[in-house]
Structure formats: structure tokens, C-alpha cells
Amino acid sequence: MVKKTKKNKMWGGRFASGPSSLTEEMNASVHFDYRLYEEDIEVSIVHARMLGKQKIISTKEANLIISGLRKIRKEFDNGNFSLDKSLEDIHMNIERKLENKIGKTANKLHTARSRNDQVATDLRMYLRKQCYLIFELLKTLQEHLVTQAEKHYDTIMPGFTHMQIAQPITLGHHFLAYVEMLERDKSRFKDCVKRLNENPLGAGALAGTSFPIDRKITTKELNFSKPMGNSIDAVSSRDFVMETLSFVAISASHLSRLSEEIVIWVSDGYNFIELPDKLSTGSSIMPQKKNPDIAELIRGKTGRILGALMSIFVIMKALPLAYSKDLQEDKELTFDALDNFIISLKSMIAIIHSLKPNKKSLALAAGRNFSTATDLSDWLTFSLKIPFRVSHKITGEIVKHCEDSNIKLHEIDLDTLQSYDKRITGDVFKVLDLESSVKNKTSEGGTSPNNVKKSAIKWKKKLAHENL
Image (cartoon, rainbow, N blue to C red; front, side):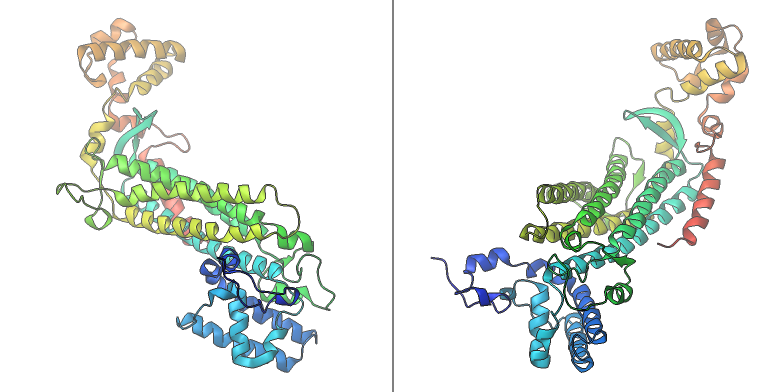
């Protein structure tokens, strides 16, 4: 049997009885929106100050409310605030606590606002803060990648296409590829802040308010760029959540790709890098195991983040204007996605900082699968003026001979090479070793050690002076 409770003080005047325990449980959000307490208190302080300046409430009342809110903030900060789940959300918990502290004057705080514009404002401020944090973590990850790139600017490793060894590259060049990806991620979060940084406060439930509020005051004090221009849009839009989670998902996919490579690189079949014990785990049954669980978890959490993105799209796709309770479902998935992305970023920072490349294994792998064959084709075209498609065919035939003879490309003798084209000279061997291969990739953005070193230095300087 469904239990009935007392009328809800916040909106119970219209109702003959209170909500059932089932309704209360379904309706409650305080178990996850409590983390908005900082933003909610800040918004309420600024709102009260504006009400006082506009003489909607007295200055004395505004100051009393502000004083009470600051005391509540201290309780939260010290871990002394006790949440009441029967009060639905964080907003009503704070308002009820304020009434306990200052009396009936607390009831004037909600003048000229609704929970609709209040929560939209809180959430925008929360996401703004998270975007700042993410930006700094992405920058830190870049810095560690650049440090590794600078240290290993000439460490040779195999480059892959289709998971097959393709051409020799440098490890530093590989790390810098992720620096470029993360830079685009940072630019997306930087751009995202511009759009979410608009102030919904003052929109009321959906229609605005007849009170003589001044939205410019709250906009300035809450560090928004401008008030939102339409009260309906202000309370019902969640594209700022969708956009933030889109960018989180894109960046998480970059972390997942890097995680996948780390998982592969530490495996016995590759042995490209070593992770420290503190970033690895063991097996409950196999004593010898050292597993890259942290990288695997980053990869796994990316799926969870993508799920949150799809969820917010599904929630929003058919909602009529303006506010619907469906919008309460935006926060839990957003908090979860952000939490998992942030811990993934921190974990990847630790991994990149601590990993140690195995140069011998990297070089051995780079020399497999005739990885300098493209260099041979290029030499034939550049030195002998053979059209590239013809050079490609000749090189393919030479590789087939090496494969059948079970020799490496640089081990083939000159007479055999000249049997494919009599113009080939001994100079060809200068391009067939790994060091020459990477050294010659001097085109802008190429893998030559000189390029990589210059690029790492450039990034180091750029990151040292970069802020959101």
C-alpha cells in the first residue's frame, strides 16, 4: 500500500494531501544535485543582493538572507550539513535551512525567481567550472606528452596502418600526435564556455517576472557574459549540456585510443613500454600477472561517457517548450560523465608521466615487415626519375624477393637490385636503414628527429603561457 505524507510546504497549497512516498522517491533529486550547493548558494546570494538593490525586499532583509546563506555555505564546506531527502532537491534543502537560521525572512528569497531558472543557472555555472578544470587537465596531459616527446625525439619505433607495421617513425612524433588532438579538445571546451556562459536567472518559470529585477546585476556578479534573451529558452534549453558532453565524449575517445595503444604496448607480444607497479594490478590466481587495468578502465569509461551523451540527446529530442520534469534527468548522467572523464584524465596524466619506453623492442619492431620499402620507392622516383607508380611496382617485386629469400630489405645485394633496374646504385642503401628513413622525413609535420625536437620545444613554450 502506498503511504501518504504531509502536504509539501513548497507547493502544497493547491493539494488536499501530500505526495505518496512513491511520488516523493521518484521526484527527489537531492541525492545527486547536492553537488550544486556551491553554485546554488552563490546564485541565491547574488539574487538576494539584487532584490535589495531594486527595493523588492529591504536592504536589511537582503543582508540577513546573505548572512544566513554564508553560514550554510560553511556548514557544507565543513561537512556538517545534513540533507533532508523529503525536501526533493538541494534548493529546498538550503531554503529550509535558511528559514531555520533566520526565520520567516527566508521565504522572501524566492521572490522573482523559479526553481526552473535557478537550476538552469546553477548547472551552467557548474559546467563552466568543470570546463575550466578539464582545460587545465588537458593542458597538463599535453605537457607530460611533450616532455616524453622531447626526451624521445629520436627514439625509433614502428608506425602502423591497419595495425600492420608500415613505416619507421619516432616515439616523440607519436606522442605529439596526441598533443595535437588534445589541443583541439581544449579549443572545443574554450569555445563551449562562450555559449554556456549566458545567464538564465530572471527568466522565472518560463515567462519572466513582473517584479522590477535587474538582470544585468546578477549577470555581472555571477560572471556571465550576458543575460539570456528569451525566458522560455532560458529555462528549457539544455544544448549547453549536450554540447559539453559532446566535447567530453570526443576527448574521451582520444584518451581511449591512447589507452588502447598502452594496453597493446605493454603486452608480451610488443613489450614497447613498461608501466610502474603503482599503475598496474595483479591477478587473484596468476601470481606472475601485471595488468594495465588503469588504461583498460579509461577505455571502458569512455563507453559510459558515450552512453551519457546519447541519453541526453534522447531526453531532449521530443520535449516541447518550456520546462518539463524530464530535465531533472540531465544532471545525474552529466555528473557521472564528468566524474569519469576527469578521473580518466588524471589517470592518463599519471601513466604518461611514469611510462618507460623499451628502446630495443621498439627498434626491433620498426625494422620488421620491410618498413623502409616506401623509402626505396621514393629513392627510385627521386634519384632515377622513375614514375612513382612504376617505382611502387618495382619495389613490390623486390620486397617479394626478400620475403621469399627470408632476408631483410637492407640485406639484399646490389646485383639483385640492379636486376630490377640497372640504373640502381649503391647509394640506395643510404635510405634503407631505419635511422635514414626517419631522418629524411623532413616535410612539415614529418617524423624526422629534428622536426620532432623543434615541435616539442614550440609546444613547451606555447603551453607555458596558455590559459583559458
